[in-house]
Image 1 (cartoon, rainbow, N blue to C red):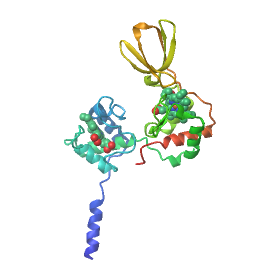
Image 2 (image 1 turned 135 degrees about the horizontal axis):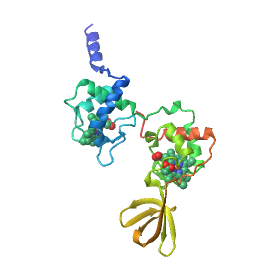
Image 3 (image 1 turned 120 degrees about the vertical axis):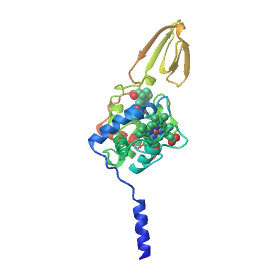
Image 4 (image 1 turned 180 degrees about the horizontal axis):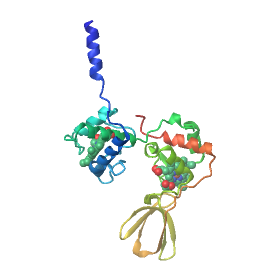
Length: 252
Ligand code: HEC
Ligand code: HEC
């Protein structure tokens, strides 16, 4: 009998409080607070600060917490030894609303629920030699973004768009630059860096080249992607999307 009581007490102690504030209004309140208190370090879209060191909070996976109650504690108490300070003076409701908002940001998807096959997608990735431009797990080229954890960054719809309309949204990092030197030589490549005087580009053989702007006759920029838009059958796109979605650190 005594044993039973002890076990019961342990069971109760281990049970974590549930988030009582999970309605649509709570999401909006949480978002408003996030915009005023958290974006300086975690970025406006919570994907991580560019200058500050706040991590991406949208991967569906947290290093310091796995449950809502765990997140609550991180937000209330902060993380010792880091710039992440707790909101000690905030009320219960405010903190739970932040937890609720953070949960809506998760881009984590259950790969098994997608229509395509991860294995078939891996095969297509190899057959079409996507690795010529993309790194996965440390192997591949550098003419496109590293895809090792692309499943944490992009949701399935975004991945499908990346494949079918690569030029829809291209970050300046991947713009093509074409320079013409004073003697008429033309070099084309990815824009790697630029300041007032110099322009650095990487050509199709991954060679880095630097040019003094003053010595150039012309500089043209193209905001389209160098990624080939292949007309793939829908089933192949589905398979590639499943494979790409599966590329992430590890499941939550
Ligand atoms: C001054 C910068 C700063 C501000 C402001 C800030 N954070 Fe953080 N936050 C960090 C840093 C840095 C870390 C990572 C600490 C570590 O693990 O090294 C972090 C970590 C976290 C984590 C844990 C992430 C994980 O993977 O476990 C959560 C959740 C979080 N912050 C939420 C918030 C919320 C919500 C706010 C606004 C109320 C906020 N942060 C404001 C800097 C900040
Ligand atoms: C000639 C080089 C090249 C090849 C080959 C190539 N890509 Fe790309 N890819 C790029 C570049 C450059 C970008 C970044 C610009 C953009 O968004 O289109 C990109 C972007 C992407 C993105 C978006 C990544 C992100 O972080 O937003 C995905 C996903 C992707 N490629 C998948 C593939 C797959 C799958 C294949 C094979 C069918 C492939 N790529 C073949 C150059 C290439």
